Amino acid sequence: MKKLILGFTMILVLTLAACSNTGDEWDSTSQISVYTRDTSSGTRAGFMGGIGFDEAVEDDSQLVDGFVINDNTGILTSMLTDEYGIGYISLSSLDGSVKGLQFDGVDPTIANVVNNTYGLKRPFNYVLRSLDDYQNDTEKNISLAFIAFMETTDGADIITNEGAIPLDSTNTWDDIKDNYSVCSQDNSDVTIRFGGSDSIEQIAKALTEAFAPKCGNFIPEHDHTGSSDGFKRTQGSEKDGDNYKHIGFASRPFKDSETGSIGTQGQLAWDAIVAIVHNDNPLMSVTSEDLRKIYGGQFLTWDECL
Amino acid sequence: MNTLKLWLTSLKDSLRVNSKKEFVDLCMRSLFLLTTIISASFIIIIIIFILREGIKPFLSNNDGLGRVNLVRFLMGTTWLEGRAFFSNMYGVGFIIINTLYIALLSLVIAMPIGVLSALFIAKIAPKKLSQILRTVVELLASIPSIVYGLFGSGVILVFVYNLGKIFGIQSKGGNSVLATVLVLALMILPTITALSEVAIRSVSKEIEHGSLALGATKTQTNFKVVLTSAKSGIFTAAILGVGRALGEATAVSLVAGNARSGPSFGLFDTTATLTSTMLQGLKETIGLDYDIRFSVGIVLMIVIVLTNAILNFVKRRIGNVNVK
Image (tube, rainbow over all chains, first blue to last red; front, top):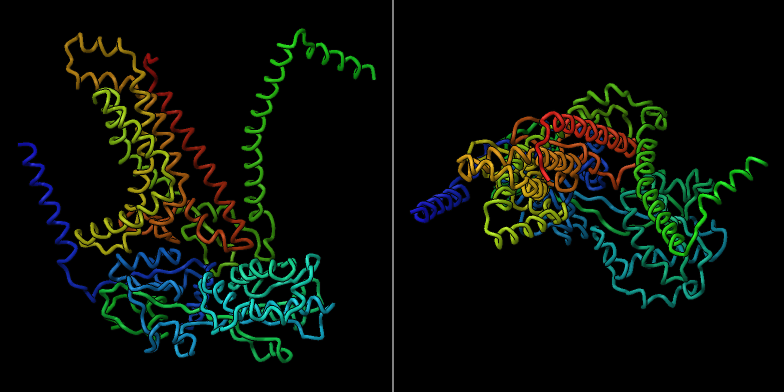
Protein backbone atom coordinates (compact mmCIF):
# COMPACT_ATOMS: atom_id res chain seq x y z
CA MET A 1 0.00 0.00 0.00
CA LYS A 2 2.74 2.38 1.04
CA LYS A 3 4.71 1.57 -2.08
CA LEU A 4 1.65 2.26 -4.19
CA ILE A 5 1.20 5.72 -2.65
CA LEU A 6 4.90 6.43 -3.08
CA GLY A 7 4.72 5.41 -6.73
CA PHE A 8 1.73 7.66 -7.33
CA THR A 9 3.41 10.62 -5.69
CA MET A 10 6.53 10.09 -7.79
CA ILE A 11 4.50 10.11 -11.02
CA LEU A 12 2.65 13.22 -9.89
CA VAL A 13 5.87 15.05 -9.05
CA LEU A 14 7.48 14.06 -12.33
CA THR A 15 4.52 15.25 -14.43
CA LEU A 16 4.46 18.52 -12.53
CA ALA A 17 8.16 19.01 -13.15
CA ALA A 18 7.75 18.17 -16.83
CA CYS A 19 4.85 20.62 -17.19
CA SER A 20 6.72 23.50 -15.66
CA ASN A 21 9.62 22.97 -18.05
CA THR A 22 7.77 22.92 -21.35
CA GLY A 23 4.36 24.38 -20.66
CA ASP A 24 4.89 28.12 -20.90
CA GLU A 25 5.72 30.58 -23.64
CA TRP A 26 8.37 33.29 -23.58
CA ASP A 27 6.57 36.35 -22.19
CA SER A 28 7.73 39.69 -23.57
CA THR A 29 6.07 41.66 -20.77
CA SER A 30 8.50 40.15 -18.29
CA GLN A 31 11.09 42.25 -16.54
CA ILE A 32 14.64 42.23 -17.85
CA SER A 33 17.08 40.63 -15.41
CA VAL A 34 20.39 42.42 -15.79
CA TYR A 35 23.67 40.59 -15.15
CA THR A 36 26.99 42.39 -14.84
CA ARG A 37 30.60 41.87 -13.83
CA ASP A 38 32.17 43.45 -10.76
CA THR A 39 33.52 47.03 -10.95
CA SER A 40 37.10 45.76 -10.96
CA SER A 41 36.56 43.63 -14.08
CA GLY A 42 38.28 44.51 -17.36
CA THR A 43 35.39 43.00 -19.31
CA ARG A 44 33.02 45.39 -17.58
CA ALA A 45 35.26 48.32 -18.49
CA GLY A 46 35.32 47.12 -22.11
CA PHE A 47 31.57 46.58 -22.27
CA MET A 48 30.43 49.79 -20.60
CA GLY A 49 33.01 51.77 -22.55
CA GLY A 50 31.97 50.05 -25.77
CA ILE A 51 28.28 50.95 -25.40
CA GLY A 52 29.10 54.53 -24.40
CA PHE A 53 28.07 54.13 -20.77
CA ASP A 54 31.35 55.23 -19.23
CA GLU A 55 29.76 56.41 -15.97
CA ALA A 56 28.85 52.80 -15.14
CA VAL A 57 32.35 51.38 -15.53
CA GLU A 58 33.14 51.89 -11.86
CA ASP A 59 29.81 52.95 -10.40
CA ASP A 60 27.16 50.39 -9.57
CA SER A 61 24.59 53.04 -8.68
CA GLN A 62 24.31 54.01 -12.37
CA LEU A 63 22.87 50.57 -13.11
CA VAL A 64 19.23 49.51 -12.98
CA ASP A 65 18.03 48.29 -9.57
CA GLY A 66 18.26 44.59 -8.80
CA PHE A 67 21.19 43.67 -11.05
CA VAL A 68 23.11 40.48 -10.44
CA ILE A 69 26.91 40.50 -10.12
CA ASN A 70 28.65 37.36 -11.28
CA ASP A 71 31.79 36.25 -13.08
CA ASN A 72 32.19 35.28 -16.73
CA THR A 73 31.14 31.67 -16.26
CA GLY A 74 28.44 32.63 -13.76
CA ILE A 75 26.80 34.95 -16.27
CA LEU A 76 27.07 32.36 -19.04
CA THR A 77 25.44 29.60 -17.00
CA SER A 78 22.78 31.96 -15.68
CA MET A 79 21.63 32.60 -19.26
CA LEU A 80 20.95 28.87 -19.59
CA THR A 81 18.30 29.18 -16.89
CA ASP A 82 17.07 32.75 -16.87
CA GLU A 83 14.85 33.23 -19.95
CA TYR A 84 14.55 36.94 -19.22
CA GLY A 85 18.16 37.68 -18.41
CA ILE A 86 20.76 39.65 -20.32
CA GLY A 87 24.47 39.65 -19.62
CA TYR A 88 27.81 40.09 -21.32
CA ILE A 89 30.80 37.84 -21.57
CA SER A 90 34.13 37.76 -23.29
CA LEU A 91 33.53 36.67 -26.90
CA SER A 92 35.99 33.81 -26.63
CA SER A 93 33.78 32.08 -24.07
CA LEU A 94 30.62 32.24 -26.21
CA ASP A 95 29.27 28.82 -27.17
CA GLY A 96 26.01 27.55 -28.65
CA SER A 97 24.29 27.13 -25.29
CA VAL A 98 23.21 30.78 -25.13
CA LYS A 99 22.36 33.36 -27.78
CA GLY A 100 25.07 35.88 -28.58
CA LEU A 101 23.39 39.06 -29.83
CA GLN A 102 24.38 40.84 -33.01
CA PHE A 103 25.81 44.25 -32.28
CA ASP A 104 24.53 46.89 -34.74
CA GLY A 105 23.53 44.03 -37.04
CA VAL A 106 26.93 42.31 -37.13
CA ASP A 107 27.29 38.72 -35.93
CA PRO A 108 29.57 38.22 -32.93
CA THR A 109 32.22 36.00 -34.47
CA ILE A 110 35.97 36.01 -34.21
CA ALA A 111 36.21 36.53 -38.00
CA ASN A 112 34.12 39.70 -37.71
CA VAL A 113 36.34 40.95 -34.91
CA VAL A 114 39.53 40.39 -36.85
CA ASN A 115 38.11 42.06 -40.00
CA ASN A 116 37.01 44.98 -37.80
CA THR A 117 33.27 44.94 -38.54
CA TYR A 118 32.00 43.79 -35.12
CA GLY A 119 31.86 46.90 -32.97
CA LEU A 120 31.69 45.82 -29.32
CA LYS A 121 35.41 45.41 -28.83
CA ARG A 122 38.54 47.28 -27.86
CA PRO A 123 42.10 46.94 -29.12
CA PHE A 124 44.97 45.79 -26.92
CA ASN A 125 47.91 47.94 -28.00
CA TYR A 126 51.56 48.09 -27.07
CA VAL A 127 54.12 50.87 -27.14
CA LEU A 128 57.91 50.55 -26.91
CA ARG A 129 60.48 53.11 -25.87
CA SER A 130 61.89 55.02 -28.81
CA LEU A 131 64.54 52.91 -30.46
CA ASP A 132 67.32 55.38 -29.62
CA ASP A 133 66.26 55.68 -26.00
CA TYR A 134 67.52 52.47 -24.34
CA GLN A 135 70.34 52.25 -21.85
CA ASN A 136 71.99 49.52 -23.89
CA ASP A 137 71.41 47.40 -26.98
CA THR A 138 70.56 44.29 -24.98
CA GLU A 139 67.49 45.93 -23.48
CA LYS A 140 66.42 47.24 -26.86
CA ASN A 141 66.90 43.91 -28.61
CA ILE A 142 65.04 41.93 -25.94
CA SER A 143 62.15 44.40 -26.19
CA LEU A 144 62.04 44.03 -29.96
CA ALA A 145 62.27 40.24 -29.68
CA PHE A 146 59.36 40.28 -27.24
CA ILE A 147 57.22 42.24 -29.69
CA ALA A 148 58.13 39.75 -32.41
CA PHE A 149 57.24 36.88 -30.08
CA MET A 150 53.78 38.36 -29.39
CA GLU A 151 53.07 38.25 -33.11
CA THR A 152 54.04 34.59 -33.56
CA THR A 153 51.60 31.68 -33.32
CA ASP A 154 53.19 30.83 -29.95
CA GLY A 155 52.22 34.27 -28.70
CA ALA A 156 48.78 33.98 -30.29
CA ASP A 157 48.11 30.74 -28.40
CA ILE A 158 48.94 32.41 -25.11
CA ILE A 159 46.72 35.39 -25.93
CA THR A 160 43.85 33.05 -26.86
CA ASN A 161 44.28 31.14 -23.61
CA GLU A 162 43.91 34.40 -21.70
CA GLY A 163 40.57 35.09 -23.42
CA ALA A 164 41.52 37.71 -26.01
CA ILE A 165 41.57 37.43 -29.79
CA PRO A 166 45.05 37.65 -31.34
CA LEU A 167 45.72 39.13 -34.76
CA ASP A 168 46.58 36.85 -37.67
CA SER A 169 49.94 35.19 -37.32
CA THR A 170 51.82 32.71 -39.47
CA ASN A 171 55.31 32.23 -38.04
CA THR A 172 56.29 30.24 -35.00
CA TRP A 173 58.99 31.52 -32.68
CA ASP A 174 61.33 28.79 -33.90
CA ASP A 175 60.98 30.19 -37.44
CA ILE A 176 62.14 33.65 -36.52
CA LYS A 177 64.34 33.24 -33.46
CA ASP A 178 67.54 33.30 -35.56
CA ASN A 179 66.79 36.95 -36.32
CA TYR A 180 67.11 37.76 -32.62
CA SER A 181 70.62 36.80 -31.61
CA VAL A 182 70.13 38.52 -28.24
CA CYS A 183 67.99 35.57 -27.15
CA SER A 184 70.83 33.08 -27.50
CA GLN A 185 72.96 34.81 -24.87
CA ASP A 186 72.51 34.76 -21.11
CA ASN A 187 70.30 37.68 -20.09
CA SER A 188 69.60 36.65 -16.52
CA ASP A 189 70.93 39.99 -15.20
CA VAL A 190 68.72 42.10 -17.50
CA THR A 191 65.41 43.44 -16.22
CA ILE A 192 62.75 44.45 -18.72
CA ARG A 193 59.97 46.59 -17.27
CA PHE A 194 56.38 46.21 -18.41
CA GLY A 195 53.52 48.55 -17.52
CA GLY A 196 50.39 50.30 -18.70
CA SER A 197 46.87 48.84 -18.87
CA ASP A 198 45.90 46.54 -16.04
CA SER A 199 43.38 44.80 -18.31
CA ILE A 200 46.33 43.45 -20.27
CA GLU A 201 48.32 42.49 -17.17
CA GLN A 202 47.31 38.81 -17.24
CA ILE A 203 48.14 38.47 -20.92
CA ALA A 204 51.44 40.32 -20.53
CA LYS A 205 52.44 38.16 -17.57
CA ALA A 206 51.57 34.97 -19.42
CA LEU A 207 53.57 36.15 -22.42
CA THR A 208 56.68 37.07 -20.43
CA GLU A 209 56.46 33.88 -18.41
CA ALA A 210 56.62 31.89 -21.64
CA PHE A 211 59.11 34.15 -23.37
CA ALA A 212 61.74 34.74 -20.67
CA PRO A 213 63.10 31.15 -20.79
CA LYS A 214 63.28 31.42 -24.59
CA CYS A 215 65.32 34.61 -24.40
CA GLY A 216 68.17 34.07 -22.02
CA ASN A 217 66.03 34.18 -18.85
CA PHE A 218 65.74 37.95 -18.66
CA ILE A 219 63.79 39.22 -15.64
CA PRO A 220 60.34 40.63 -16.53
CA GLU A 221 59.02 43.20 -14.07
CA HIS A 222 55.31 43.99 -14.25
CA ASP A 223 53.73 47.13 -12.86
CA HIS A 224 50.38 47.71 -14.56
CA THR A 225 48.67 50.89 -13.47
CA GLY A 226 46.33 51.88 -16.30
CA SER A 227 46.24 52.52 -20.04
CA SER A 228 47.33 56.14 -19.86
CA ASP A 229 50.58 55.17 -18.12
CA GLY A 230 51.44 52.89 -21.06
CA PHE A 231 52.57 55.74 -23.29
CA LYS A 232 53.45 58.16 -20.50
CA ARG A 233 56.11 55.91 -19.01
CA THR A 234 57.71 54.76 -22.26
CA GLN A 235 57.75 57.85 -24.45
CA GLY A 236 55.73 60.45 -22.56
CA SER A 237 56.35 62.74 -19.61
CA GLU A 238 57.49 59.98 -17.22
CA LYS A 239 59.81 58.15 -19.59
CA ASP A 240 62.89 59.14 -17.61
CA GLY A 241 61.28 58.96 -14.18
CA ASP A 242 61.62 56.22 -11.59
CA ASN A 243 58.64 54.42 -13.08
CA TYR A 244 60.01 54.27 -16.61
CA LYS A 245 59.04 51.20 -18.66
CA HIS A 246 60.49 49.40 -21.63
CA ILE A 247 57.13 48.23 -22.92
CA GLY A 248 53.74 49.73 -22.12
CA PHE A 249 50.24 48.54 -22.93
CA ALA A 250 46.93 50.33 -23.55
CA SER A 251 43.53 48.64 -23.74
CA ARG A 252 42.17 51.38 -26.04
CA PRO A 253 43.30 53.12 -29.21
CA PHE A 254 46.22 55.51 -28.68
CA LYS A 255 45.13 59.13 -28.56
CA ASP A 256 46.52 61.74 -30.94
CA SER A 257 48.68 63.05 -28.11
CA GLU A 258 50.12 59.55 -27.72
CA THR A 259 51.71 59.22 -31.14
CA GLY A 260 55.17 57.80 -30.63
CA SER A 261 58.17 57.47 -32.85
CA ILE A 262 57.81 55.27 -35.94
CA GLY A 263 57.82 51.52 -35.46
CA THR A 264 57.24 51.57 -31.72
CA GLN A 265 53.47 51.12 -31.52
CA GLY A 266 51.15 48.36 -32.59
CA GLN A 267 48.32 46.05 -31.68
CA LEU A 268 48.67 42.61 -30.13
CA ALA A 269 45.04 41.54 -29.78
CA TRP A 270 41.37 42.40 -29.68
CA ASP A 271 39.23 42.14 -26.60
CA ALA A 272 35.72 41.46 -27.87
CA ILE A 273 32.65 41.31 -25.69
CA VAL A 274 29.26 39.92 -26.58
CA ALA A 275 25.85 40.57 -25.05
CA ILE A 276 24.06 37.28 -24.39
CA VAL A 277 20.47 36.23 -23.73
CA HIS A 278 18.61 32.96 -23.23
CA ASN A 279 18.09 30.88 -26.38
CA ASP A 280 14.29 31.33 -26.12
CA ASN A 281 14.60 35.09 -26.30
CA PRO A 282 13.43 36.31 -29.77
CA LEU A 283 15.81 39.30 -29.68
CA MET A 284 18.49 38.98 -32.37
CA SER A 285 20.34 42.26 -32.49
CA VAL A 286 21.05 45.19 -30.19
CA THR A 287 22.54 48.62 -30.60
CA SER A 288 24.71 50.39 -28.08
CA GLU A 289 21.74 52.60 -27.25
CA ASP A 290 19.54 49.56 -26.45
CA LEU A 291 22.20 48.21 -24.13
CA ARG A 292 22.69 51.60 -22.49
CA LYS A 293 18.96 51.83 -21.81
CA ILE A 294 18.74 48.26 -20.51
CA TYR A 295 21.70 48.66 -18.17
CA GLY A 296 20.74 52.19 -17.17
CA GLY A 297 17.16 51.20 -16.34
CA GLN A 298 15.16 53.08 -19.03
CA PHE A 299 14.10 49.75 -20.57
CA LEU A 300 12.62 47.60 -17.80
CA THR A 301 10.64 44.99 -19.75
CA TRP A 302 11.54 43.07 -22.87
CA ASP A 303 8.77 44.46 -25.14
CA GLU A 304 10.37 47.89 -24.83
CA CYS A 305 13.38 46.81 -26.84
CA LEU A 306 11.84 44.25 -29.21
CA MET B 1 75.51 40.08 37.31
CA ASN B 2 74.70 38.30 40.51
CA THR B 3 71.04 38.04 39.70
CA LEU B 4 71.88 36.60 36.33
CA LYS B 5 74.05 33.95 37.94
CA LEU B 6 71.27 33.13 40.35
CA TRP B 7 68.80 32.89 37.53
CA LEU B 8 71.09 30.61 35.54
CA THR B 9 71.56 28.26 38.48
CA SER B 10 67.86 28.08 39.05
CA LEU B 11 67.36 27.40 35.38
CA LYS B 12 69.97 24.67 35.57
CA ASP B 13 68.18 23.25 38.60
CA SER B 14 64.90 23.13 36.85
CA LEU B 15 66.50 21.59 33.80
CA ARG B 16 68.53 19.08 35.76
CA VAL B 17 67.95 15.66 34.40
CA ASN B 18 68.74 12.55 36.32
CA SER B 19 68.59 10.02 33.57
CA LYS B 20 68.42 9.64 29.84
CA LYS B 21 64.73 8.82 30.07
CA GLU B 22 63.95 12.10 31.80
CA PHE B 23 65.99 13.95 29.24
CA VAL B 24 63.96 12.43 26.41
CA ASP B 25 60.82 13.27 28.33
CA LEU B 26 61.93 16.88 28.68
CA CYS B 27 62.70 17.06 24.98
CA MET B 28 59.29 15.72 24.10
CA ARG B 29 57.58 18.15 26.43
CA SER B 30 59.41 21.11 24.91
CA LEU B 31 58.53 19.84 21.45
CA PHE B 32 54.85 19.78 22.38
CA LEU B 33 55.15 23.24 23.87
CA LEU B 34 56.78 24.46 20.68
CA THR B 35 54.05 23.07 18.42
CA THR B 36 51.39 24.57 20.68
CA ILE B 37 53.09 27.93 20.56
CA ILE B 38 53.31 27.73 16.78
CA SER B 39 49.67 26.85 16.29
CA ALA B 40 48.48 29.35 18.87
CA SER B 41 50.63 32.16 17.54
CA PHE B 42 49.14 31.84 14.06
CA ILE B 43 45.76 32.98 15.23
CA ILE B 44 47.42 36.00 16.81
CA ILE B 45 49.47 36.74 13.70
CA ILE B 46 46.35 36.46 11.52
CA ILE B 47 44.32 38.71 13.80
CA ILE B 48 47.10 41.31 13.94
CA PHE B 49 47.46 41.23 10.15
CA ILE B 50 43.72 41.56 9.49
CA LEU B 51 43.37 44.28 12.12
CA ARG B 52 46.31 46.27 10.77
CA GLU B 53 45.00 46.16 7.20
CA GLY B 54 41.36 46.52 8.15
CA ILE B 55 41.71 49.55 10.39
CA LYS B 56 43.69 51.48 7.79
CA PRO B 57 40.63 52.71 5.82
CA PHE B 58 39.29 54.39 8.98
CA LEU B 59 42.54 56.06 10.05
CA SER B 60 44.52 56.94 6.96
CA ASN B 61 43.67 59.39 4.23
CA ASN B 62 43.36 56.53 1.68
CA ASP B 63 45.48 58.26 -0.97
CA GLY B 64 43.36 61.37 -1.00
CA LEU B 65 39.93 59.75 -0.81
CA GLY B 66 39.56 60.67 2.85
CA ARG B 67 38.79 58.55 5.89
CA VAL B 68 35.95 56.06 5.76
CA ASN B 69 33.21 57.04 8.19
CA LEU B 70 32.88 54.16 10.67
CA VAL B 71 29.25 54.80 11.62
CA ARG B 72 28.22 55.05 8.00
CA PHE B 73 30.23 51.90 7.26
CA LEU B 74 28.44 49.89 9.93
CA MET B 75 24.95 51.24 9.19
CA GLY B 76 25.12 51.65 5.41
CA THR B 77 22.51 50.15 3.12
CA THR B 78 24.60 50.40 -0.06
CA TRP B 79 27.98 48.75 -0.51
CA LEU B 80 29.52 51.70 -2.31
CA GLU B 81 28.05 55.03 -3.32
CA GLY B 82 29.86 56.71 -6.18
CA ARG B 83 32.62 55.39 -8.40
CA ALA B 84 34.85 52.58 -7.24
CA PHE B 85 38.42 53.82 -6.56
CA PHE B 86 37.08 57.40 -6.30
CA SER B 87 34.69 57.14 -3.36
CA ASN B 88 35.05 56.21 0.29
CA MET B 89 31.35 55.80 1.02
CA TYR B 90 31.27 52.12 1.85
CA GLY B 91 28.56 50.48 3.92
CA VAL B 92 28.07 46.95 5.26
CA GLY B 93 25.08 47.35 7.60
CA PHE B 94 22.68 45.59 5.23
CA ILE B 95 25.23 42.84 4.59
CA ILE B 96 25.53 42.09 8.31
CA ILE B 97 21.75 41.69 8.50
CA ASN B 98 21.73 39.54 5.33
CA THR B 99 24.46 37.32 6.71
CA LEU B 100 22.71 36.69 10.02
CA TYR B 101 19.34 36.21 8.31
CA ILE B 102 20.75 33.64 5.89
CA ALA B 103 22.66 31.76 8.60
CA LEU B 104 19.52 31.63 10.72
CA LEU B 105 17.32 30.35 7.88
CA SER B 106 19.80 27.67 6.89
CA LEU B 107 19.98 26.54 10.50
CA VAL B 108 16.18 26.36 10.63
CA ILE B 109 16.24 24.01 7.63
CA ALA B 110 19.32 21.98 8.52
CA MET B 111 18.68 21.54 12.25
CA PRO B 112 15.54 19.35 12.22
CA ILE B 113 16.80 17.23 9.33
CA GLY B 114 20.25 16.86 10.86
CA VAL B 115 19.08 16.01 14.36
CA LEU B 116 16.47 13.52 13.18
CA SER B 117 19.00 11.80 10.89
CA ALA B 118 21.39 11.67 13.82
CA LEU B 119 18.69 10.09 15.97
CA PHE B 120 18.03 7.53 13.25
CA ILE B 121 21.70 6.67 12.83
CA ALA B 122 22.42 6.47 16.55
CA LYS B 123 19.31 4.77 17.88
CA ILE B 124 16.98 3.37 15.26
CA ALA B 125 18.95 2.09 12.27
CA PRO B 126 20.31 -1.46 12.28
CA LYS B 127 24.01 -1.58 13.09
CA LYS B 128 25.19 -2.29 9.53
CA LEU B 129 23.09 0.51 8.08
CA SER B 130 24.14 3.02 10.69
CA GLN B 131 27.79 2.31 9.96
CA ILE B 132 27.22 2.97 6.27
CA LEU B 133 25.24 6.12 7.00
CA ARG B 134 27.92 7.40 9.35
CA THR B 135 30.51 7.02 6.58
CA VAL B 136 28.20 8.81 4.15
CA VAL B 137 27.78 11.73 6.55
CA GLU B 138 31.53 11.94 7.10
CA LEU B 139 32.08 11.95 3.34
CA LEU B 140 29.53 14.73 2.92
CA ALA B 141 31.28 16.79 5.58
CA SER B 142 34.59 16.52 3.75
CA ILE B 143 33.31 17.67 0.33
CA PRO B 144 35.00 20.98 -0.48
CA SER B 145 32.78 24.04 -0.55
CA ILE B 146 33.45 24.81 -4.23
CA VAL B 147 31.80 21.49 -5.11
CA TYR B 148 28.72 22.52 -3.16
CA GLY B 149 28.90 25.81 -5.01
CA LEU B 150 28.99 24.12 -8.41
CA PHE B 151 26.11 21.89 -7.40
CA GLY B 152 24.29 25.00 -6.24
CA SER B 153 24.80 26.95 -9.44
CA GLY B 154 24.01 23.95 -11.64
CA VAL B 155 21.06 22.43 -9.83
CA ILE B 156 19.74 24.62 -7.03
CA LEU B 157 19.63 27.81 -9.13
CA VAL B 158 17.52 26.04 -11.77
CA PHE B 159 15.30 24.56 -9.06
CA VAL B 160 14.77 27.93 -7.38
CA TYR B 161 14.13 29.64 -10.72
CA ASN B 162 11.45 27.09 -11.64
CA LEU B 163 10.01 27.19 -8.14
CA GLY B 164 9.69 30.96 -8.48
CA LYS B 165 7.87 30.51 -11.79
CA ILE B 166 5.34 28.17 -10.18
CA PHE B 167 4.55 30.94 -7.68
CA GLY B 168 4.52 33.52 -10.47
CA ILE B 169 7.71 35.22 -9.25
CA GLN B 170 10.41 36.03 -11.76
CA SER B 171 13.68 35.51 -9.92
CA LYS B 172 17.06 36.55 -11.29
CA GLY B 173 17.99 33.18 -12.72
CA GLY B 174 17.53 31.67 -9.27
CA ASN B 175 20.26 33.82 -7.68
CA SER B 176 18.50 34.49 -4.40
CA VAL B 177 18.24 34.25 -0.64
CA LEU B 178 16.49 30.90 -1.02
CA ALA B 179 19.25 29.40 -3.19
CA THR B 180 21.90 30.59 -0.73
CA VAL B 181 19.99 29.18 2.22
CA LEU B 182 19.53 25.81 0.50
CA VAL B 183 23.22 25.53 -0.39
CA LEU B 184 24.29 26.50 3.13
CA ALA B 185 21.76 24.13 4.69
CA LEU B 186 23.21 21.31 2.58
CA MET B 187 26.71 22.27 3.67
CA ILE B 188 26.07 22.43 7.40
CA LEU B 189 23.83 19.37 7.44
CA PRO B 190 26.68 16.82 7.74
CA THR B 191 28.35 18.85 10.51
CA ILE B 192 25.14 18.98 12.49
CA THR B 193 24.33 15.32 11.86
CA ALA B 194 27.77 14.05 12.81
CA LEU B 195 28.05 16.06 16.02
CA SER B 196 24.46 15.41 17.10
CA GLU B 197 24.99 11.73 16.47
CA VAL B 198 27.95 11.67 18.84
CA ALA B 199 25.93 13.60 21.43
CA ILE B 200 22.98 11.22 21.13
CA ARG B 201 25.15 8.14 21.34
CA SER B 202 26.75 9.36 24.54
CA VAL B 203 23.44 9.62 26.40
CA SER B 204 23.81 7.02 29.12
CA LYS B 205 21.82 3.83 28.74
CA GLU B 206 20.47 4.09 32.33
CA ILE B 207 18.35 7.13 31.50
CA GLU B 208 16.98 5.41 28.44
CA HIS B 209 16.25 2.16 30.29
CA GLY B 210 14.58 4.12 33.04
CA SER B 211 12.22 5.71 30.58
CA LEU B 212 11.43 2.40 28.92
CA ALA B 213 10.86 0.78 32.31
CA LEU B 214 8.34 3.47 33.16
CA GLY B 215 6.33 2.35 30.17
CA ALA B 216 7.28 4.94 27.57
CA THR B 217 7.46 3.69 24.01
CA LYS B 218 10.69 3.72 22.01
CA THR B 219 9.63 6.85 20.14
CA GLN B 220 8.58 8.66 23.30
CA THR B 221 11.92 7.74 24.85
CA ASN B 222 13.87 8.92 21.83
CA PHE B 223 12.19 12.30 21.66
CA LYS B 224 11.49 13.11 25.29
CA VAL B 225 14.47 11.51 26.98
CA VAL B 226 17.33 10.93 24.55
CA LEU B 227 17.08 14.21 22.65
CA THR B 228 16.57 16.32 25.78
CA SER B 229 19.55 14.66 27.43
CA ALA B 230 21.70 15.31 24.39
CA LYS B 231 20.54 18.88 23.94
CA SER B 232 23.81 20.39 25.04
CA GLY B 233 25.76 18.40 22.47
CA ILE B 234 23.15 19.14 19.82
CA PHE B 235 23.50 22.82 20.61
CA THR B 236 27.24 22.54 20.08
CA ALA B 237 26.46 21.07 16.67
CA ALA B 238 24.26 24.07 15.93
CA ILE B 239 27.01 26.48 17.00
CA LEU B 240 29.53 24.86 14.66
CA GLY B 241 26.92 24.79 11.90
CA VAL B 242 26.24 28.51 12.26
CA GLY B 243 29.97 29.13 12.24
CA ARG B 244 30.33 27.34 8.94
CA ALA B 245 27.29 29.12 7.49
CA LEU B 246 28.61 32.53 8.49
CA GLY B 247 32.07 31.86 7.13
CA GLU B 248 31.27 30.23 3.80
CA ALA B 249 32.36 32.33 0.83
CA THR B 250 32.89 30.44 -2.40
CA ALA B 251 29.64 28.52 -2.63
CA VAL B 252 27.62 31.52 -1.49
CA SER B 253 29.07 33.94 -4.02
CA LEU B 254 28.07 31.56 -6.82
CA VAL B 255 24.37 31.56 -5.93
CA ALA B 256 23.67 34.76 -3.97
CA GLY B 257 23.56 37.24 -6.88
CA ASN B 258 25.87 39.58 -4.91
CA ALA B 259 23.41 42.42 -4.38
CA ARG B 260 25.03 45.77 -3.72
CA SER B 261 22.27 47.21 -1.57
CA GLY B 262 19.66 45.85 0.78
CA PRO B 263 18.89 44.26 3.16
CA SER B 264 17.06 41.51 1.26
CA PHE B 265 14.42 39.56 3.14
CA GLY B 266 12.34 38.22 0.23
CA LEU B 267 13.21 34.61 -0.51
CA PHE B 268 13.61 35.28 -4.24
CA ASP B 269 15.58 38.53 -3.93
CA THR B 270 19.29 38.63 -4.68
CA THR B 271 21.48 38.98 -1.63
CA ALA B 272 25.07 39.21 -0.45
CA THR B 273 26.92 38.02 2.64
CA LEU B 274 30.03 39.44 4.28
CA THR B 275 32.20 36.70 2.83
CA SER B 276 30.81 36.88 -0.70
CA THR B 277 31.29 40.65 -0.69
CA MET B 278 34.92 40.21 0.36
CA LEU B 279 35.46 37.69 -2.40
CA GLN B 280 33.94 39.70 -5.27
CA GLY B 281 36.77 41.24 -7.29
CA LEU B 282 39.31 40.55 -4.54
CA LYS B 283 41.87 39.34 -7.04
CA GLU B 284 41.52 42.33 -9.33
CA THR B 285 41.01 45.35 -7.14
CA ILE B 286 43.51 47.73 -5.56
CA GLY B 287 43.78 50.60 -3.09
CA LEU B 288 40.95 51.38 -0.71
CA ASP B 289 38.63 48.99 -2.53
CA TYR B 290 41.08 46.23 -1.54
CA ASP B 291 41.79 47.41 2.03
CA ILE B 292 38.10 47.79 2.82
CA ARG B 293 37.69 44.02 2.33
CA PHE B 294 39.91 43.52 5.39
CA SER B 295 37.60 45.83 7.32
CA VAL B 296 34.71 43.60 6.23
CA GLY B 297 36.82 40.70 7.52
CA ILE B 298 37.04 42.36 10.95
CA VAL B 299 33.28 42.87 10.96
CA LEU B 300 32.83 39.21 10.04
CA MET B 301 35.11 38.06 12.86
CA ILE B 302 33.23 40.23 15.35
CA VAL B 303 29.89 38.89 14.09
CA ILE B 304 31.11 35.30 14.46
CA VAL B 305 32.55 35.87 17.94
CA LEU B 306 29.37 37.61 19.11
CA THR B 307 27.10 34.94 17.65
CA ASN B 308 29.17 32.20 19.26
CA ALA B 309 29.17 34.00 22.61
CA ILE B 310 25.39 34.40 22.54
CA LEU B 311 24.82 30.79 21.50
CA ASN B 312 27.22 29.55 24.18
CA PHE B 313 25.38 31.63 26.74
CA VAL B 314 22.08 30.09 25.67
CA LYS B 315 23.69 26.68 25.74
CA ARG B 316 24.76 27.15 29.34
CA ARG B 317 21.28 28.36 30.22
CA ILE B 318 19.52 25.31 28.82
CA GLY B 319 21.80 23.28 31.03
CA ASN B 320 23.18 19.82 30.86
CA VAL B 321 21.91 16.38 31.72
CA ASN B 322 24.06 13.56 32.97
CA VAL B 323 25.77 12.23 29.88
CA LYS B 324 28.93 10.27 29.52
